[in-house]
Length: 443
View 1: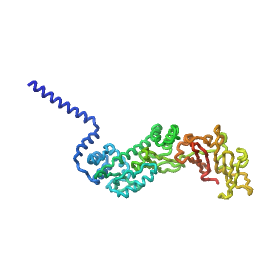
View 2: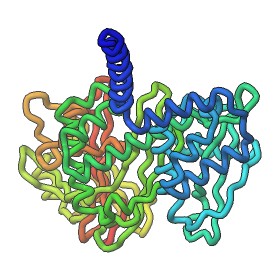
View 3: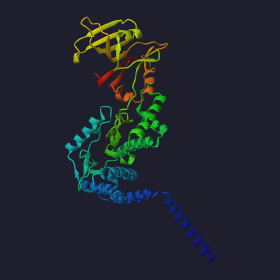
């Protein structure tokens, strides 16, 4: 009897150990893993569901976070298209944030193939030729959410998701959704680094976008610092108030509702776009106009001329000596003549009223161009730091965002608006700088 009991006890012990091991394994899994593991077993013999039913389940998951797990578990494994619960959850959260500003969801509708193609074509047009094309996603059916009373004033940005038709059934579009979430995460991280004032973190985000050798590490650091300063000084909206307008694998668009304009006197909205380039790298287009400081012309480091001011012929010749070339054009507007005076490496454009023989005493300076190069010590500069011969990287250290505006720097004074333009040679060195008047308040 004792022997039998011991044998029975050993058997019980083995079973108990096996159960404990199974429990330990189950407890080591996250709740999501358990749900997915059970669901996969349940779905082995489940029947396919219609596109209407999948669309309804996704819509329910978008309507409330309480419905996400149930919706996911109700979709047969085959029709999940390999999409994980985590990706499904995050995508529904993204669409919910887009949808909430519209109001209460009441229904959904399927777009026609023509409407879907048109929508993708519009996204491609906005993203430009360097971006990955939405046309690479085929076999998709777009679903648009509908609302009781659409509260969003911008009717051109509906909330939409897609289903994919493959292997004879409608499924979740795993590749489309996963890449949409990746793009969303990237730009979200970008905004967070700016909000946190994390220069190093922001550098790591923008560095992959800047693949030209001109973007040396110090330039990237300057760009990151400039972005953080801009948002701190000019953007009034908090991250929570940014409006997600588009979320596609190749294009994510945000609207920032309240930004102080360049004059400092008005509040405007602005758009920030993320594109997925053909090489797979994300590019964030976050262009803005900075309020530039006035720039003056210097000789040997000393400020001597300002556009918009009037100078006599004697003052000009005292600075530069006898001109190499002087031309007077009487065909100009306003009854004034254009006076062009060229010196070695410097061209001045003035407006005045010369006498019939072309002589003049005083005229207003409209533009200055520098095109000389003195490797030892540039004598002609703007603000003592901008000169012909400087490298484009050096220019970006002075104006970190000037590449976003086509290498044009603009500023305003009480006299008017002025812009400074840069030209470059084959080695990416500055070959010409022109500072000129755009509009005048005094002329």
